[in-house]
Length: 132
Image 1: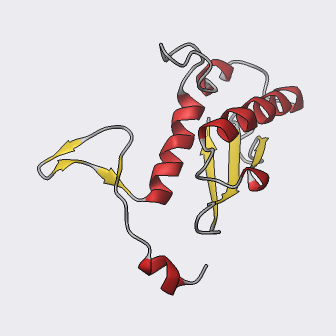
Image 2: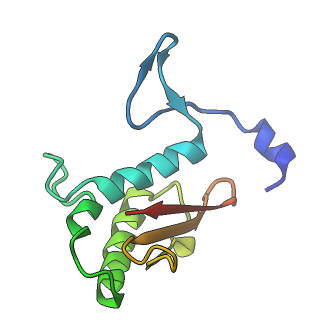
């Protein structure tokens, strides 16, 4: 999408995550920041943590002491892809959602999660990396 078209689209403020109060009121995020914040919520919320959505979340912290190897990566990739597809429905083109999981070569004790997608309305590709 061209920058001219992006500049004509209305800028809708989203409530930021985590929620913060400032002197101006509540902190807001752009659409791109909001989607990244939604991804962080899915990554770091454990299933069962939300009362009315017990299936929500991936629970990255519960995998901290598991062996950092291919079986874990496949399980993480599969579960995370499903959770993200559900949570980002309408914001992200589901066909473009890609989740890559592995260990950085210089830090084999860490789990690196790379999430790539295309914003449905803007056709803009975004990519984020998270280290657990």
